[in-house]
Length: 244
Ligand code: BTN
Image: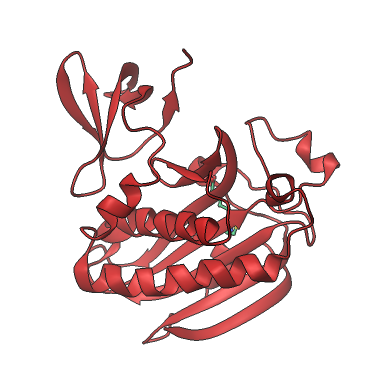
């Protein structure tokens, strides 16, 4: 499953670095960094990546079916990370569609899937995972959304290698399974961690924010939302939970 694993001291972004490489024919290439100078988040945001503080991990893989499967792949990666955190005893970790991992509404992990290649043919997919482990106070002040780190949850200093090993132990088999069987086996696994199911949410649909109730995932990984008595599907975009 694993083709190679490298640990860099500094890169701009582990995602960007792997996208510059050619994918192995079999298995995955894994790149970790101690620090990123241009960590990338979703929607063009930056991902603060101070030295030796967190886990910055990307995997590169060739897969059939084209970039159209990238959205499914990032859901699968989210499930694998949530399962790994549960394996380590962080049983409060939940998924917020599409693939943020949160604890009590505070963000613990961000995932960013990016692709290169053809839409329909074989494609290269990079999945980047940033896990908050030990947030330095100077960086904490700059983050505008609620966040949490593993040290806080564990009440102790958490070893990053243990976290990486647990994530890869779940992620590598999950990627193989997704290749063979698609999203279907992951839907019930996602549901076990789905923090939005049954909750009142605000979603961006048809260019405007609308209120509805999240109903879980459709077969293709879209978010089902009931709005004004009608079920709608959200394939991309932002969701926020409505405050009671
Ligand atoms: C998000 O906005 O929630 C996604 C954050 C993804 C961050 C990770 S850190 C490792 C990898 N390299 C990057 O540049 N981004 C991802």
